[in-house]
Length: 345
Image (cartoon, rainbow, N blue to C red; front, side, top):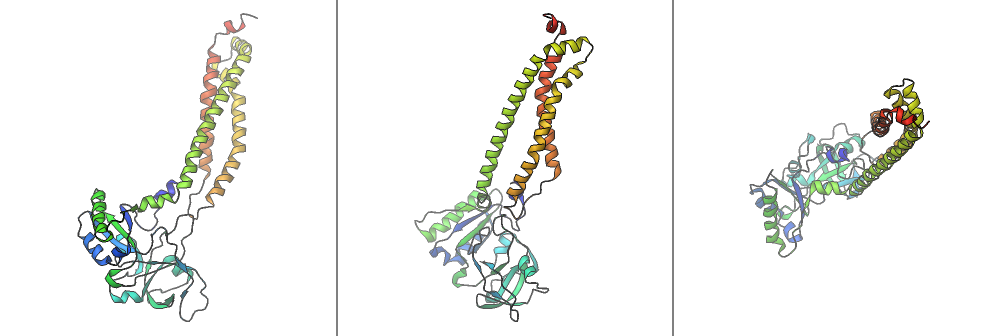
């Protein structure tokens, strides 16, 4: 989960919030963007037709003149000209949209699309998407437009200049540091100019991103609680067994001490069997735990790898807990006066 929350997804979602614009506001996108860009609390603003981390629109209508081998499902996203810079997305080749009528005949592809199409020189390539003919003008660095359970798929990005700058109903606002609340308030004021009494709602992009993994976060919290309970119950059991063993072997311990056994020998006498049992339990549990974790990770296309050091840490941790519990009781037994232990014999 830490990996998911800190992974570079190809854009900067920090300090960005989105607003679903009603039709009256969307139809005046140019005016909305111009007004917000003048605000000192706002670093960048743009629009698109979908949430960048929840792109669900897809089509099989992608083709290249002269090629009949393309049978791929492409996701698509319509953006305003300043969207890439607002989201701090990188172009690996070519250029983005300029905000001129020429944008209507231009397409951006991500690196995955270029790779699966086997385009050696993508810039200038003639393409057809959903009946629209155009040219590839740029290649966008791969970004995760769905959650990390899914591999990055081919995506085509376009910008159709519409009346009043209309490019989609999702407004993206990037606030400046320490100016998030003023940016939200300014956006709300603009929203009310066009939306009237409609409620103003906004979503933080990073929060929206993390919400896709809420069920896994809840599972992780429950796992942590159950693990803690299991360790506590096991520890209480070990303490009880160690106490019982020390009582049963009171006379034996006394005799061994009289015969010259050291505290170290007595501690080893009491602890040996428990350590071996814990090691045996660990050897049984580790393959099962490893299988379960690797199976769980298969749900994610992008994930960590579990190396051997994780299991070494687990073994060391369990041994430490065992030695703290057993060692305490064994030290108590080894410190008793043997005379008191043997006086009734």
